[in-house]
Image (cartoon, rainbow, N blue to C red; front, side):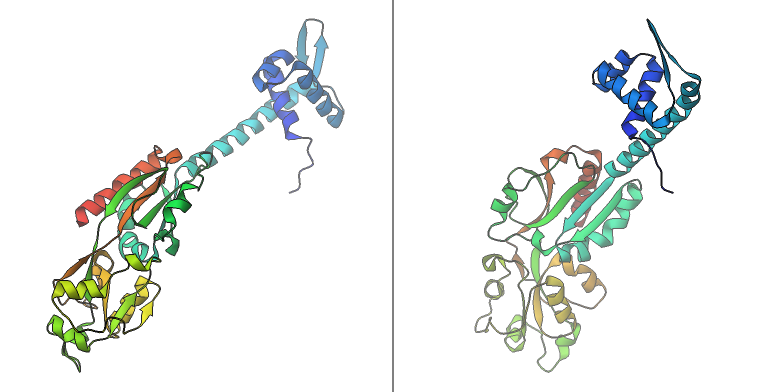
Length: 315
């Protein structure tokens, strides 16, 4: 339905003037001048074609038309206020979380039902973004980002990186290690994988999801820790996404270095296995990054506490 109405501000002015029966008191409430209130009322009366007030020497009274209209306008203003407040409450319970794709898929989402069960009132939205993995310029870029505290929906990020994010509240979540994973089929394949020395005959899968090459998992370092030499560490396919690298390993296309939290479900399901105990420390950790402007919001605190409890129980 199309409504043909005068400016809604005139209704607000009329409601205040009718409630107080005073242009001056209405002006004080609306933070305008009495002349501005009088002008708004005259504009509304002109539009309606009848007077709303009787202007007496020392008093202000509603006309019959004004008396008839006032309760309906008041109810309408109450409805507007209730709708806005309801929307604000809903927005204040909205939480947007961005995370690296692999972490969101393999670790966060499988646990998310527990958060929703404990905080059913929170409207949570998860999005994945490969840019939530640190690159060489991350600290500089995040320093110049602005957070608008007027935004009702709270937005936080889970980052895989150094934790150097000036101007933000930063909480470490997990410090994972890399493990070597492969398909169970490789144990008894054409080149059986029984000891780390057998890797010389295997294809190495390279995970290049970290933008900074210096911070990626190093096959050279893993072989050094495992006491294996003579392996061509440059051979094998390269993937820009950790999940793709892990899927290649699941399909028996080679061996991969993967963050343990990302592959434990696959290991439990028997799609991957960790054949050797050697682990490689990660140069990065997972951090919850919160704009200072919203750090004290209850919905943010609830998510932070839940996330830390999940990480503690995992560790």
